[in-house]
Length: 230
Image (cartoon, rainbow, N blue to C red; front, side):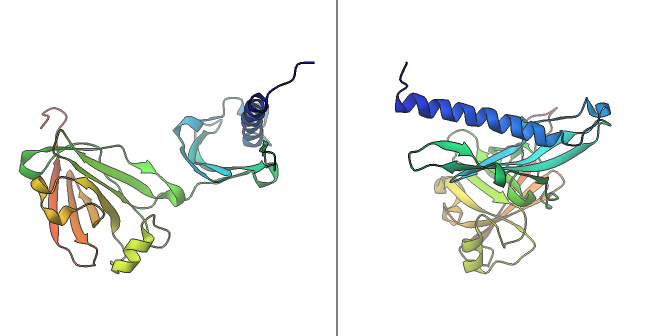
């Protein structure tokens, strides 16, 4: 009889686990469905995926009902790891739940005109855990400027420890600076400093707080019309 190597057995187990996950998710998504719901479907590829240790989570998966209505679901898929390394699906912990309502934090993607007429790009905002909106900005070309921010309350925020230590006020959208060329923007906008982000119409305002709760500097960016690029 053909003897499989440990690597091959592991690959086979992983493949089986994936197939089991697919089968279980699809089965649970149609529990109680009637023949009239034949056109109902879901769009896993549009969900946000995160993983922690032995648990995979897919956030805000769009689910279309037979009437065309869109619902959003969070799917939690836990695994078990045997002492020998075998990975199996923990079906007891599999959960499909309604997604939390998206928290306020609307930001418009596109090309922005900013400091000294330089162009900056804001990507399409994403939806993270607990319905938080995540957004990032990047300077074009050699004028390095990177930052990201996340909506929602300070409690549970990805930068909660930093924001709490700085005692920043609640009710704003907070983030941090990434790699930046101080030559173009000033030393205030150093990597790791705290920023707040506000979108008013086509204008984005970033305010730098350093590592305190006092504003130190502000940059304003204006969204370029698609018919008249910056």
